[in-house]
Length: 93
Image (tube, rainbow, N blue to C red):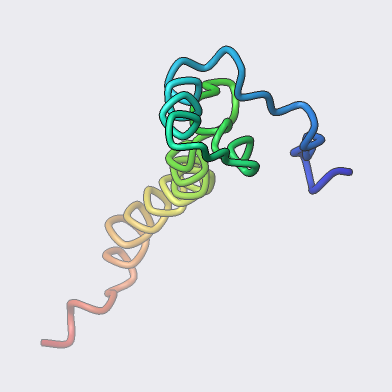
């Protein structure tokens, strides 16, 4: 199953075994006679290869930056050189 450019992994690939924090959590629960059947839902927090939220925020914020910077430069150049020569918006005061 895919969503855009990101492939959604199969839930069976998430294993809590081998992650020290989650193994300790399971040991603490086992002492109380409990078990967390949904612990695999926390595995993503301990896997660095999965994209983090900030990576998505950085991508969203900066993806149009180069076009915005180019448009800003063009706007400044037009304002300084073209409009001033034609008697632009500053001459009527």
